[in-house]
Length: 397
Picture 1 (tube, rainbow, N blue to C red):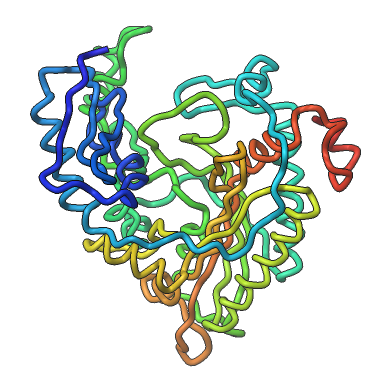
Picture 2: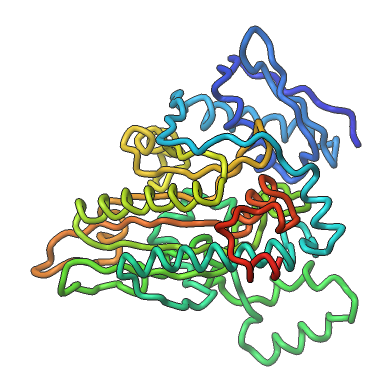
């Protein structure tokens, strides 16, 4: 580990910026191995970073300062407003990630990539069935989407300009026989293919999707919905590149998402979102899960003025985030309830009879995280699980 480098700020950050800074520091540079915030006078005066390449200390420090000036410092303080809370729990399973790893129920095969079996998998499948039941009650059509999605679709969704750090692009070898031969001539079994493959690759016309709902908007592009509304549900693997990973199921590169997407007039979409929030709350309470639902501030809006749009999202309550406890003093995001107004319908030319304007909304659940939070709260032994979990799931666990 290199000698830590202290990066001080021209103007200290207010304490409410601390969490934002923590979330963004590792994205500044892959050279940052560890960091800690430097607190002074009730605020954040800087950050101490440890680098893989100490020779880049000045360059990386400049990047950190630009992050603070261009992004973090511009964000208004928006206190998290809790919409509802679930009853608190008294105990939590210690070192759950380690125990799952020892049981081979969660095996990390590479950073951010984890194979699941046993109790986590049984719970993922169980909760997914329950969410599908809620979707059917809404009249949703089940769809199985392909994994890949065109890059230009995500561009129209505004995802690339807002979250480039999370993107995963898919490519292939450039279609030319001489290129294939040049590539295979360089290839040696066991060699470092990754270091030269992009020299022979074609355009990145497709991506690994960061969310399931983008497929829905693409599928309905140019449609005039006869009744002015529709509901779709789908479960799929989604992919978001995070800056750092740890063993376990809390933060993954490749994870499973169940979504329920509404298209309709504004009142219909808002009413469906609200109704599902209450049904999900009842489902969680029946499984004795502790956590809360709060107004989110991770923008679904897009554009250059990221900070202002994050503030707008908080004020308009376009996103509610479901957070479940994994420890008495710590929660993780396990789901969200989103309202997009006409953002996606306008970009994909989706309308009702006589070209009437429509809105969209979606409800999404991260199944690995939900299973992990459940096990943190109720333990690995199915004998200690709430009676609402069916016997066949307990046996599968």
